[in-house]
Image 1 (spheres, one colour):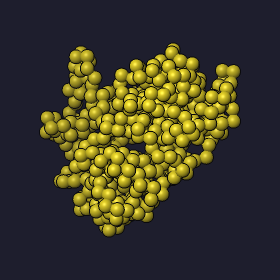
Image 2 (cartoon, rainbow, N blue to C red; image 1 turned 30 degrees about the vertical axis):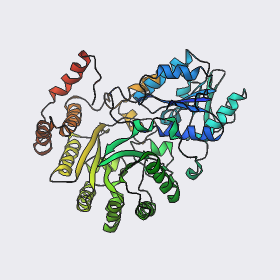
Image 3 (tube, one colour; image 1 turned 120 degrees about the vertical axis):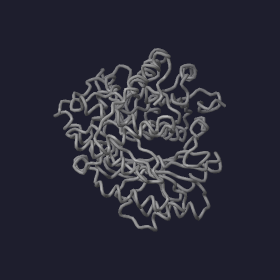
Image 4 (cartoon, rainbow, N blue to C red; image 1 turned 180 degrees about the vertical axis):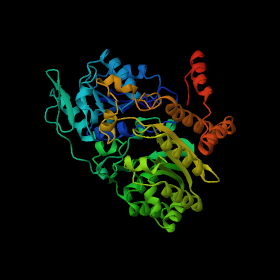
Length: 488
């Protein structure tokens, strides 16, 4: 059976597509959780579904033509703000040229800007918020010759003008059907990580109760956090082990550690049921700063090998302004505690916030240096990524006041890509420091570049001497001249 077909060789009632989200090639494929969850609800309602994931299937045109030949009731696309919009529009126009199937967009960007998304001629409907129930109701309405009027969580066009219905209540996650992994080629998403030979992902909660000013979640999830029951979570872990021989797991969710008692119950269940996996999750610094040593020991005993901590800035002033709710000293305390517990630490940083000064940037670089220095359990630093003014976030209005001009058309949001974004307050030497810091952090992780990149990074972190990364400007050009993709 074709791994991207829903039911044997039968035509699909609904085709779901996950566009790629980067101009650069990638080596690991995150699971398309959004379309997988939509597909599970559609299947439970008796509809045949086919998933096409551009990340895992770059030559998608042939399979997609074949799927469209079955005249699906709609074609769904899941899209985030940024480069994924470019690829989402490309496939939507491809479908429009070859099929009468309505094109439905869902995901974070259409949820935040539904009217502007509907204004594009390639988009017929948008699903706002969680789309499992909305997709089922829409499929039934279209099959019966009806429009989207009255369907909660749906935007549509009436006489060419966008209309958006009211929000749909959040789902009970325990009510969701099992994930239909047979709709994808699972082996494309299995990797090696933290000593595990077959590492996979699992999503067991949604949302986040915090209010970080750079993050989409307060708008998308309205600061509501929800979880599956612990029994259901452990059952899903066992399924992955039994069906796919998984021995490693990343908890793919916005905020795994919100409820410490839930985490304890999961860890105790993994130990009790002898579900031997090595696992990794994202975590807030303040969660770990306030826990006891016994909690860290339980994490390690249950298989926790690494945690990724969202730090963002080394400046307490910036941390307060972005609503992060942590301090520089907390970060350093947690680093020491995790090192004593034998848990690897990865850190995420961000630069380019509105109002960020040269001193703030230096504090961020120096904190990165302190986290790496003499730390045998240091893993890596993600980023620093460039702050991007996403619509609906807490810093968006301040970005407008500082001269940022948001796109007026859907297709222009594709340029909201932190790799290449131009924001008015980040120019000249300050921008070069941000970009070169990210380049040096990447180089530190590469065997051939490590010593050279580390030297330049330490000069900046400890002596405030910026050595420009001329090679950063030359390498993309060399790759383009060779006709290849530039893989960061």
